[in-house]
Image 1 (cartoon, helix red, strand yellow):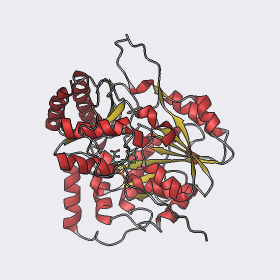
Image 2 (tube, rainbow, N blue to C red; image 1 turned 180 degrees about the vertical axis):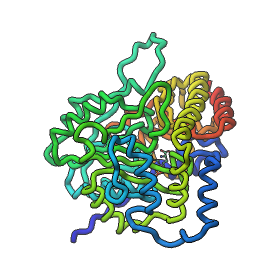
Image 3 (cartoon, rainbow, N blue to C red; image 1 turned 90 degrees about the horizontal axis):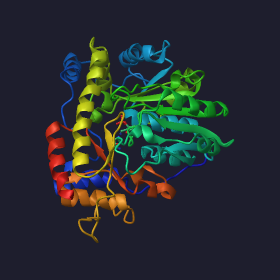
Image 4 (cartoon, rainbow, N blue to C red; image 1 turned 90 degrees about the vertical axis):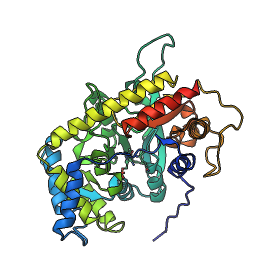
Length: 416
Ligand code: PMP
Ligand code: GLN
């Protein structure tokens, strides 16, 4: 067999958390909670360790108790009975579900449609599979400069003609991320139906619907699942993450749900990546999902994050960083047009030396070194051709305790 090799440089994540540590800034960059997970989740892990018996490999495609719990939780949301043994696979975080799915579906030379901005991890897997990315951008609708209307992630849309044109007879995969990192967009049912209408014309195209932020939905928005559209379950792999759902990103438990033929292929690939997912974390996540108040917990998670969103939105407005108010996720895009960078001021480029000519990278560095608040440059989520679309934005996360968010808000006032 031929051997694919890929040589990668460092990613955006290797720059901004280390930079934040170096300058002791408030880290609103990488999305991981800086608060403890809920008590019932911690208890589930303590119970698992204390009762013993969960210290060896478990079933490769997924620990039985967890796939059963996932089937119970998700079946009503998918309007069908999901078979825990054939239609679910657990993974080492959503990250490995993405990797195993892409490696299973994409052969060298196949084309993959990515919607920019896109979570950067997709690119790595596509490169390792030998796939060829094709880009379609979410674009913010033209705004009337005098309008006082709230800037919203709703106004970031894809053009269906552009999407249609990105397809060819080589298209094998389309990756959707809903709710969307970094824009915070929650796709409407109608938007998803329009995407499905295009997908339907290409029988060889599989869809990944990365829904790791499914329980962080604000205001009167509703999370609609692509796989529940007519004829879409058969070709869609929906991906979730315990890291996001229970504020335990370090436990690295994720899963994918889809039709048995595709899940079988992914599970066959997964045997050759981690073989199985750590047993104690899967047992504990299963116990957490079995909690009798789980549906209330999902609602509370959205409420908690909505309050944090409002806090950060207000701070960004006060600092002149006109935020794109997100409908979901725990990210906000802030508009940095008002920042006037002077020469090389504050630009410590010593960690990765990446993005030297990209404004958003230099603004993110300056915010860390001069203002004490770390952000992520969203051009890391674009192809080189379209990186310019991100130049006036930085991404903030609000999955942090209120004290950190308030303090960040005070420090951001020093921009003015
Ligand atoms: N997809 C998206 C859109 C994400 O933001 C993340 C966060 N890292 C992941 C997948 C990966 O999730 P996990 O931490 O469970 O691997
Ligand atoms: N998904 C998180 C983010 O976008 C973390 C990414 C990562 O650690 N690779 O910030």
